[in-house]
Image (cartoon, rainbow, N blue to C red; front, top):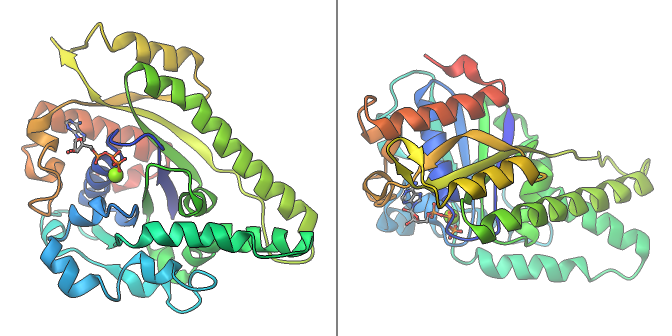
Length: 313
Ligand SMILES: Nc1ncnc2c1ncn2[C@@H]1O[C@H](COP(=O)(O)OP(=O)(O)OP(=O)(O)O)[C@@H](O)[C@H]1O
Ligand SMILES: [Mg+2]
């Protein structure tokens, strides 16, 4: 099982669209995929379930909010019990044993993030606060180690556009980090800042692990960047426009985060109606379509990096 956090604390850069479509394409290639929606905006969830369905079937007992919502996340509810299998997308998959499952989010997750952060401060001894830091930050990692999740090839975590505690639990749980970004000045400027913040978290976590060695079953973490995927890229005559090309080159040459070869072009026709049909655009469109071919290349590159190409039919 490979666990990948899809994150960028810049909002509206295509994280959720990428997560939904990449998950669906991987599942359509025969992989067993779990999507985890960690964003209180709940957009990934609504890409697969109608709002009515979510209200009737998920809202009150089957969202990640219920899991985070206890003194220690997961104490009252098992993560595995929150997994649901959205029907419409799974009907559209062609290659068994491909499957796309989801743990849905909840708008109330925003309050939980603040409460969790407050809980970090509630200890008086240095030792106690380090233990609390490690326990809280590694809660999702521990939960995903449950044997139930061993049946998945790939777990994709759609993070909120922030660096709050819930997002940090996703980074601690992940082996790789995928960073969707727009090709503009502020986005490329933000990449090194993002890399720095992730590195600080990893260092603090591992320092505490080393300090506590022998006193608990904490292990160091080493999440690495899978890379930046430029999204909503303006293509003209098969080329990236002159306005955006320099930002991609700048990131490729000077950013601390590697840049993937593949890109997702700007195409409101394909990606604009995210969610309404419950089946991501890349599964609804002919395989001869140019955007589908490009996205297929992205899936090849990402799944190849993760050594998951065995899923290709
Ligand atoms: N390649 C694309 N071409 C055109 N529109 C896109 C593309 N990717 C995403 N969009 C649209 O841009 C908007 C933002 O995309 P999305 O919700 O995936 O971003 P996000 O990074 O998850 O946002 P947030 O930070 O709020 O979670 C949505 O309306 C989506 O339909
Ligand atoms: Mg999103």
